[in-house]
Image (cartoon, rainbow, N blue to C red; front, side, top):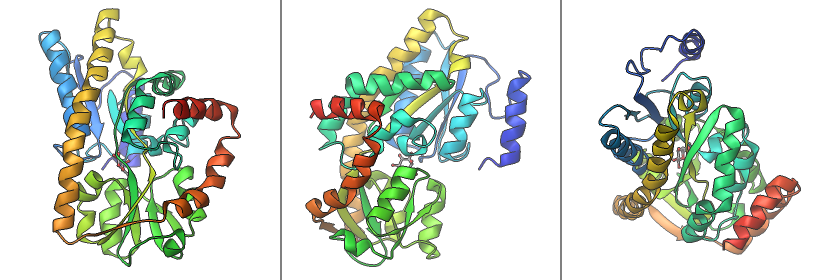
Length: 327
Ligand code: GTR
């Protein structure tokens, strides 16, 4: 885990042009961060992209992925990439919501009806527009990946209605949207970084959390939280971001290649994702996790004021209209 001090040192090194120890020695070797374990679809998609770029450039450009949060929390890696200490980071929109307003539309509750709907919207104008907005803040938005449907799970009991969440201490990602959503549903939100959730469940610091099947499985949270409730309240997708300063050092044709490889890694990732999601669901159920359907109408109703409040923003509203048009 990257400490604050290491981060400042690294940022200082970047300003003076010295690459930190975990950065690349060879300029064409791009360093990428991911909080997920080795083999997770996002990790594999970025590796796939690296292989494609290496093949096309005869090894002149390549990507090395540091998985399992070796380079720190998602919010930290975003700043490392902005300041040029890290070349690429793969994070969830939730980690970007507070600092990058356009990302909020993709994390808000019940904006997407299904995975197909989300993919359709991300492949079109909405996805392109959200990616484009990163440039003003030192990042190149390379791709948007699936993250499945986020659902609630906890150590206490099945959650069928929002009232079943009342009083539960619920881990949420560090995003005002998720904090407000948990509150609107009557839970006590506790923002924690991804790497802290498993032990927080074990030590009863929290009663539950929310995430997709694959993360629930690979983070091993399913060993502790035995009640999974199919709320599908957010499809908050993943973003693949590159340091703009680094990107600008490449020739126009190399930049084109990096963008193309990222775009082409999306269908590859989706294929892996569909398999991984189904496999995780089966595995955790076999391990004793109890699954229940929820009262969707009640969840929608409880989340509605939150969505309406964000949609008062005209830019978010325009993106939302684009999402609905893609339904
Ligand atoms: C996962 C996502 C991670 C991380 C995590 C979380 O679905 O893939 O990048 O954001 O959720 O909740 O922190």
